[in-house]
Image: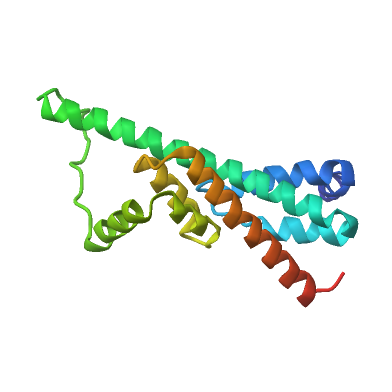
Length: 174
């Protein structure tokens, strides 16, 4: 079993597969799944230092696409919520065993106001750990414009990968 796992890791480390693997890791890590993609970037660069800029751009593209998926998930959740709210207001029966909706906390209300005030520019913060990925989903929920959000996500994520990769490579030289 361990030999099989080592073979898979070796196969994924090959330059022709490394960038595609990096893209997928970056994409998945930008959705709401708790996963970091920086170790994949650094690992690829330790094996192939000549792929610095392609790795940065591929990771940025994958992470931005993952942010876009989160944006669409937020928009879909908003639509589902509105349909359920309309059914409730119309007096139609709700699904059995459903809990009533909870009210927003003071912090959640304040964050919503802040996001509406700054609009798509808040997606520049999508690079932040913990709050960055849900921020993309909230942008979709609030129906912030998709293309400007995607643009700001890409800028934030590009600079995150650039700065983080340079910092990690400086701390752990190849």
